[in-house]
Amino acid sequence: MPFPYEEFDLSGVRTYPLASRASKANAADFATPVDRGASFKQWFDSLPAILGAEDLRRAAKAIVEAKRRDGGVIWGVGAHVIKTGVSPVLIDLMRRGYVSALAMNGAGIIHDFEIALCGATSEDVDESLGPGRFGMAEETGTLLNEAIRTGAGRGEGLGQSVAAFLTSKNPPHADTSLAVAAHRHGIPLTVHVAIGTDIIHMHPAASGAAIGDASLRDFRYFTSAVARLRGGVYLNCGSAVVLPEVFLKAVALARNQGAALDGLTTVNIDFLRMYRPQTNVVTRPVAGTSGTGISLVGHHEVLIPLLAAAIIEGE
Image (spheres, rainbow, N blue to C red):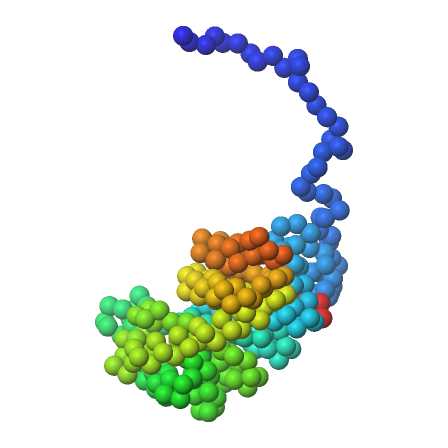
């Protein structure tokens, strides 16, 4: 039976006073203009207390408070963070005491190693893949694998091995290396590797036994650091798969052994909001606890320096 053309009767529509409604956006939270020559703090304070700007404030405050109460701040860093040039910013935060431990994926330590050695990294894959040159830089493949084998033989983790190796060589661009800075400041560096994902695995000098042993040891070092994050902060920057998975397993192990991780703040920083970091970093580790998860969406080369400046201003 077809319905008729019949206008809906609006005569009984109910309304309410606008002022009585709970609203998500309020004028009190809006941005304020800044004058020419304003300081960073004046600009930062002028941002709206809404969405991403407020999340950035919350992240900075959590990191400052974590340092004050000795709760710990762990940074997880993917390769893109290093390639976008923010290592000096993170090194400055190490110097200021805002890095308790540093974690990388396998690509991260490769780019950091190349930066330290020759001040440049990130080859043109499209150009080099066809002629079979991709990933075949001699120093990267030979020296990194040497560092890993040597360190594994001493019973060290992968990050610890490479950091000590690089520092001992005093490469020309050591001051821009996260690994060297971590070693100099006594900050644990762990590297979490998936076998076959990194260019150094293509070299004959690669030892699966050494890489696996050293990276597994780093997982246990990392878990030990995560277990200390009561009232602390974990940041995942630019790793879409490996570090979020490693972090979730570390949280699981820490709680299995009685670490409550109360008051934990987790922060994901990336230019896309992806499933695994959102789930394994922002949501699951703090679900049902007093902790909180924050997602900051934007470019690493913009957001990380912004966050660092906000941390310094909040000291």
